[in-house]
Image (cartoon, rainbow, N blue to C red; front, top):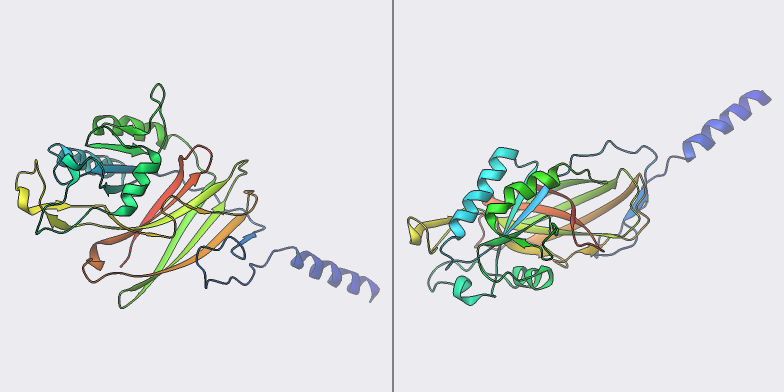
Length: 281
């Protein structure tokens, strides 16, 4: 009987070592506490995906060519490997001033992001994983260089898995993010969640049919800080962050064409560590 009690105690003690995710208060979706725990079984790592951010404008003659290059890269590499966001900015007015009577694509969100990561001298241009590739000292590159830079980044690994689950009620989307670490990271990371939209018909200089050009990947909204929200906690294998975020999609956006993009970045370098996207519907 004594041996049975000891064995039972051992089983109970061993079971208690599996950490149970804590209650998570989602009332404030950008809190940095009560949203993290460590699992006992570390998941297999995802492959790294790469983010292209196409900095663009509706009066830019060569911007349709940049959009075509981004599409070519995505098609060649698959959407699970390359994610595109189009940043319609307010800077560089000669390229970006909106056309009267057409859908507005410019956002303050995109403009603030470009202020932070670097404003190119002209368009089209863009970031690849927000990385700086030597010998350059800036993050923006001509679209003709994107493919080669994407290939370089795809050879890298990532320490964090990203899982995006979502539900839709009328026009309100509820997003459940899980960011789970498979290896240790010495520095700090942050995450951002964006809403992008495809299939927007608006005027575009340089297009074969300028007044009926279809704009894709347009950044529409950022959940919280577009430059990233802190992930508070030591980044060790098994570290898990759960976030729940809500947004009511405006009626002028076509839900059928909307996607969610989650980006995890390194705070020190600003580079994208991993990225994933899913359709809202």
